[in-house]
Length: 127
Image (cartoon, rainbow, N blue to C red):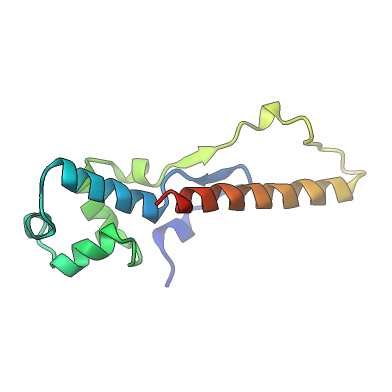
């Protein structure tokens, strides 16, 4: 099942600002700051406790309903939750636009892919 993040078009220097794991952690932290139990939070937002818990555990696909609930709870806009982080490409000296060297372009694309994967794994690991 595709998620909202699957619909966002990213180029090689972009990645989502928040993973679902980071949003889940923010929800859990905010609930605790407000001294709300799972039951109180879920009741306030009209969802089952198991639904709320699945959000905090990031064990469900984050669909429109989930993003709306998280946005309301964290007082975050849709644009903020789905924002992109963009790398500063101007300071990277190994970039090239020389079309005479396709092997360099391929190596740069591969390095971008690996870098993006490392960043996303780090974001996920901070859950």
